[in-house]
Image (tube, rainbow, N blue to C red; front, side):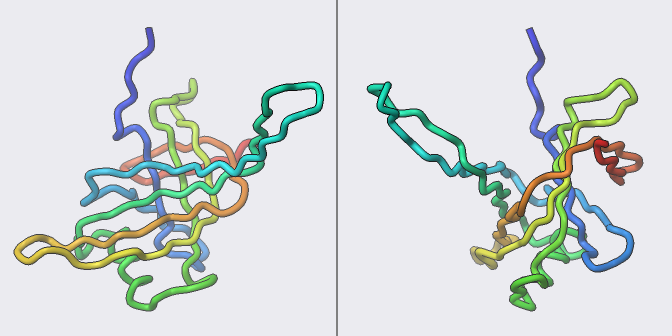
Amino acid sequence: MGRFVKRTEIMAFLNTTPGETTETMALVGNGMTSGSYSYEASETNETYIVDDNATTIIDSYALSLDGEMKCIFGDAVYDYINGLRRKMATGTDAETTVLLVDKYDVDSDGSFKAQKFNCSISISSYGGDGGATPTIGFKINVNGNPTNGTVKITSGTPTFTAEV
């Protein structure tokens, strides 16, 4: 029997300095109690003349990570996403990169399976109830095809190596 994967082993790092020569990857998750990847498969159903039942073909995916985090001033991800909110960023101003890491899938050299994507970030909500820490709702929209590879994490900083 295998082992259960912990939620802490499904990681996302967001580049909070797009446009800079060196990416600054920050862990997504502080102030968040939930976060799931939504794959939103686009499907075509066809019934071939030799079949009575349909065949489903997967055409593409619209991968995203919907999140809501508590507003933690000084957290790199919050500060970056809140900056997008303030600017009401659109187009390329709302684009960066995201690194998705499966920390439970370890290679023999201690690196983890990972995928790097271009992404765009949309803001869905901001605020909250009186007497409570406000939240910011956002969606990391993954764009295009991934660059598959591995990542090593040293002192909380990921180093991505693309597959050859």
